[in-house]
Image (cartoon, rainbow, N blue to C red):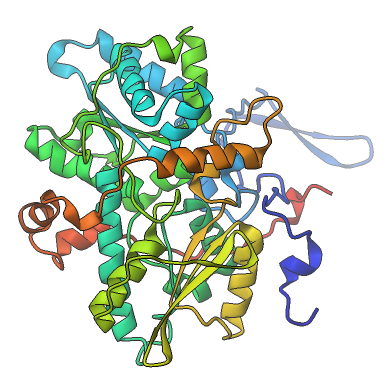
Length: 470
C-alpha cells in the first residue's frame, strides 16, 4: 500500500468522484448597525434584543464559486447551474425576439460532433441528417447561425502538435516538458487543479480545447468579419459532457473589455432532447438546414482520425514522427494494456524507442498514470487523458441507452457512426494558414497565444470541518 495515494487508500477505485462534502463556500452576511435595547435577565445574563428581526437574502452559489472551491465539485456531474442551461437559452431567445431590430443579439450555436452523433443514434438518423435537422430546429426557435466545432478542433490539434514538438526538443533541459498531457477534457483539468495542483499542471498542454478555440473564433474573428462586437453575440455550444459548462465559465475565457464570455452558454445532448420534448418536436420531421460554413469545415459533418475523443494522440504521433524523426507513419496500431481504456503506441528508430504515446480514459487509469508520474516511472512522451471511460462519445451528458440496450452496446453504435464520417486532416484546410497570418498575426504572436492557449491554476485545499457531512 506504500505506493498508493491517500485517495486510493480511502476510497474505492471508481470512475465517478462523488462529492465528499456539502458546499463549504462561506456566505457573507452584512451586519447593519441599528437601534437596540439591552435587557438583563434574572440570572444576570446580558441579552441584546434587536427592535427589528434580521432579514437574510437567499444564498446563491455561482459556477465561478464552484471553480474556486476545493470542496464538493470534483466531477461536474453534480453541477446544476441556472446560467448554463437550456432554460437560460430559451429565456435569451425569448427576450431577443422582443428587442427592436437594432438591439438584437446575434445568436450562434456550435455543435460538437460527439453530441450530434448521440442525438442521431437516439433518433435513428444518420449524422448528417441529425446535424441538419438540429440546425433547422435551432433556427426555427431564433438561432441565427449554426456551426460545428471541427474547424476549431483542427486548429486545436495543430496548436497541440506545435507545442509537443517544442516540448520534446527541450525535454533534456526541462524536467517538466515530458510527458505532455492532453488538455481537451475539462473534467480532467478540474480534477488536476483541485487534487494534484502544482505538481501535475506543468505537464498539461496549454492548448485550448475545441470548445474554447471555437469561442475565440466566434467572438473575435467572426465578430470582426461581421462588424459585431463580442457582447452583441450570444454564443452557445452543444457538448457531450457537463464539465464543458465549467470550462466555459473559467476567467481565462472572459473578455474584460466587453464583459462577455467567449462561450455564453453550454447545453448538453440530454438538454437538447429536453428542448425537443418541451416544444413537442419530432426531430426526424424537422425541415433540414445546412450547417453554416464560415467556421465549419463543410456544410455536412466531418471527423478527425483517431477516435471519438478528438484524435489528439493520433495526429500528434504522426506529426512528431515526421517532424522530429522524418518517419512517415500511415497506420497506428494501438496496443491494449491493462484494459481497453489504456492503450499505447511506440515509434522505434534504429532499435531505440523514440516516441511512446498512450491513451488513458476514465479515472481508474488517470489515477494510475498520475501515481507513476509522481514516482518518476512514467515512460510516456504524450498521454491523451479523458475523464470518461471510452472518451467523449461516452460523455456524462450523452443520451442514455434505450431499454434493453447496454451502455457498451450504445458506445459501440456511437463509435461505428463516428468512424463512418468523412475524415479530414487538420492542416488540409487552406483557411488554417490564413487564420495564423491574417487573424493572429503569425503562429507565435501574442494574439495567437491569447486566442489558442490557456493557463491553469492550483486550487488551494481548504477544509471547513463544519461543512463535512458526518
